[in-house]
Amino acid sequence: MEQARDARFPIGKFRLEGEVTLERRREWIARIAAAPARFRAAVADLTDEQLDTAYREGGWTVRQLIHHLADSHMNAYVRVKLALTEESPTVKTYDEALWASLPDSTITPPAVSLTILEALHARWVDLLESLDDAQWHRTIRHPEWGEIPLESVVAQYAWHGDHHIAHVAALRDRMRW
Ligand code: NI
Image (cartoon, rainbow, N blue to C red; front, top):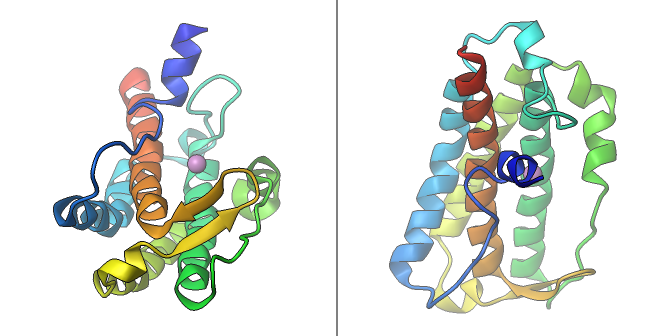
């Protein structure tokens, strides 16, 4: 049980504590900027069979992880834009497990979502770098988690990219790929 939990959260669960400084915001943006290239490097040279290997027992395959990251970050990007243009908009959730089971997550080559991530994060980073203090404090309303400031959303997605990159790294380590 303990081991399974560790495999799911190789860099720990997301937590945002303490004061949010300018430096921390810059660090989150830098992590979001770096994530597509880091993910591309993490899956480099994997065969189709390796891509279709679950990162842990009962978990997603490497292929599904890549497509999940694109699905998740496309939703996140839309949430950021909604937060910047509407008053605390209620965001739409989605069933990420079912999304990951659809064919565009189970058969599409990873290169497709790596390209999406590279383009998407380029726009996302441009947008985030432009935010002033008031914009960082704008909020979305999440149906389950309530009202969340943009800075917390951004921190969470900086963590999210690293979280899934760590899944692939741990698998390659364990399998000696
Ligand atoms: Ni995820």
